[in-house]
Structure formats: C-alpha cells, structure tokens
Length: 440
Image (tube, rainbow, N blue to C red):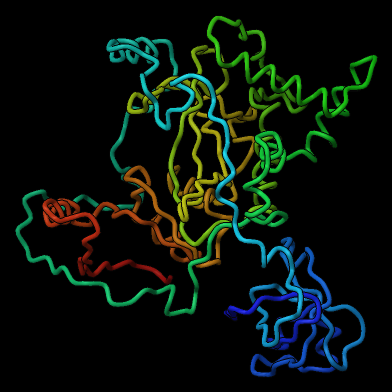
C-alpha cells in the first residue's frame, strides 16, 4: 500500500507500480505486467470517479510518459513525490467540526438510548399469549449449537496460557486500518450538509426515480414529482411518531404469479436497493460490527412480526445489520429483514428466494450473507454471542474476515474469570489448539 504525506493536485508528479494503472491494456503495451516495474514522472491532470472492478473509486487522472490518452489510478495507490502549487480542494480543506446542528425538540428526541421500554412488566404473560397465537418469539440469547460440539464443563481445571499478542495478522500482510468513506463525497463536505441532504445521500434515490415514481404515476391522473414524494414520505415519518393511527389495511398479502404469497413484496426490492446503494457508495472501515436491531411495531399484523424479549422495544420487525465500528461513524451499510414464519414458500414447500450460501445453518448463513460485501478485503467483523458458531467463524475466516467472539468449545468461563478484575484496556490472548477436520 502506497502512502504519502504530500498533497496532490494538477501538475503533481509521482510514481506507482505499472500494474496499478488503468486502462490496463493501454499501459501494458509500453510497460509489461510486472509488480516490480514502476512508472515514474507520472503527472496528475485531474481527479474523479472511475469504475474499477464494478466499484466506483476516487482516482487521479494522470499522464504517463510514452502512453497516449487518459489513464487513471486509485488515489491510495499513487505516491506523490512533487507537490503542485495548488493542491486539490478536497485535500487542502481541513475537516470542519465546528458547525452547530440544532437538536430536536423534546428530551426523548435527544436521548441516545431507549429511555423506557414500550411494554410493561407483564412481558412474560404477553410472550405466552403471542406463542399461543402462533406468532414467533425469539427468546434465546445463548450461542446456537450449529456445527459445534458439546461445550466444555464449567468446572474445567486444566491450565490456561494467557499471553500478550505480539503480532497482528492484518498488519503482517501490510493491511492498513482504513477509515470508512463515501465514494462520492468527502467528509469535509458531508459535515456541512443539512439533514435532508444527508438523507438523500444515504437513500437509494435512483430507485425512487426509476421504479417507485413511474409505477405510482401509472395509477395517477397528475404525475407525482420527486419533491412531492419526499413530502409524502416526511408525513409518513411524522405519523409513525404517534400511536393510534390504523395501518392494518396496509399489510394485505400480495400473491405473486407463481401461486405463492409474499407479504414482503413491496419491501423486498427496497431493501435490496438500499444494500446495493451502500455497496457502491460507501466503503466500510477496517472494523465493523454485526448485530441485531428492532423496528418497533405495536400492530402484530405487520409482516414478519415477532417478539424479542431481550430488546428494549421487543415487538416488531427484527433486522440483522452490520455497521462501521471505527472513528465514531456508526454508519449502517447492510441490512437483512428476519422474515420468520412469513418467509414465502412455493406450493411444493421450497423456499422462493434462495440464499447465496446453501448448505449451512441459519446463523452461519446470516453471517456469510451479511459480510459478503467485504469478502476478500481483510476487514475485521465483531459480533456478540448470538453469532458464536464455531464453523461460522471458520467460514468467515476462509473468506477473509475474523469474528470477534469465542464460539462454543472455547473456555469462555476461564477467560471471563481472568479478566474479571482487570482494568479497561488490559489485553491478553489465550492459547488453544483447535482441530478442524477437512481442507480449509
């Protein structure tokens, strides 16, 4: 990875390995494909977005000696050796952190955590009633037993070897701890955006313009415009802040042409577009967190309704989500709705929408699906005990990730006891040999 402290701009001179320049065919005519061969005296002519391996990246547009036409290279791969008189604005402007943002009105609106549960102390009775009605209750907060052997006895008295970790496997491979970033906007630009501008940046607006509005206009006399759509959406957000507005009629099943019932028909494409938008628009940092969250509902007739008693707001839709866990920017970049008993099936009993990772247990499939956008990128994923599936950790590791919790078969009780009276920040590693059969 090339790094430099010199600013870049039009007229800057630098160098990089010849294999990192694009278009590859044009460069390789003059510079054979050799990782040790460098192009020198390369001049930057501009900057801009270019698509590399189906991913939009910020690049330097450059002029290479003996190569005709425009070439480009990913910014982080280029070493600036001679700075220009005028650097690019994106690199010389300091990050603005002093812009005041008005806080929402009301104490509850400014809280960063759930102040009060939305159910009373009679939750146990409500759980029994929901189960009697056939609704799904996720009341298991223990690690699942998928692909794992029996846990070790709690009173295990064997030796445990705690040592100070002396190396990082990522740094051994020259992987740097990159911060998260947006593909089309710099942080100094984002910090000055209004709330509406931030929403539009994070929202798959192309899906609204290409799908939602045209399909809506098929049933309207006067065409709906984008501005009117956002006003309508804002009204729905405002209505969602209050109880008592009936919405059961909004959740009638949708029967598709193959004869199956898909109650998530209107949401499924929206969630897919949300994930696609972030896959192309946001680059997660080196550290990410995989967890679950609730979208609170008090109407048990909504699709996928379930009860998760351990959550502060236990009723509604459960989502698996993965978010950026570094630098204080907790940006959620991939979500998956837990469909539960409403997951559609065909008449023969087969699932309508198949997973990309067949043959694994439910939790292992979720781990692989949620982390797929960062497979092969050497990033770190941290998960709680709900994702402590031994084989799932191994499968994630094979695809270039690590899971930050011990699975079944690891002496968690001994680890908890060792760290019980340690100060925050103390770290050791516990050496164990894990024998896994089969080729990895």
